[in-house]
Image 1 (spheres, rainbow, N blue to C red):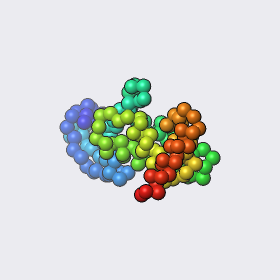
Image 2 (image 1 turned 180 degrees about the vertical axis):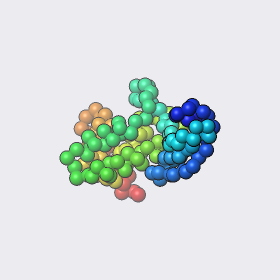
Image 3 (image 1 turned 90 degrees about the vertical axis):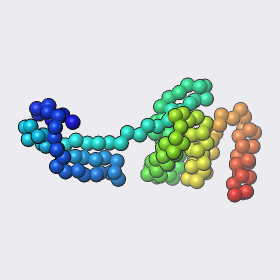
Length: 154
């Protein structure tokens, strides 16, 4: 780290503080040359996997896109925003836990449907109807029946 005042590269750490559950570390430093004091901040940089879309395109995993899809499904439903944020955080953690460079949008969609099923049945049906791109209503009803029978087996 270079001193912001004299650009000297030697300093000493006077104080270290951990913020936000260990995600941010702030250090108070003193330059050994000019005795100027300054604060630095360390942040953990997470590397999310790339998302492979249905058409083969690849793009960066974006929490905002997951949140937007969930918000659309939960529109006019009694689901607090805090629960949606928690669901997005669980999805982000899940994506990191996969320990893969790439993850399919299909597997993300499946995971979101599982999470939404626990949260709100109507939001689940809305999300599933868009995510699975059914050809007609009968195919959609059959899919819901399969899901219902799987739930009864558990």
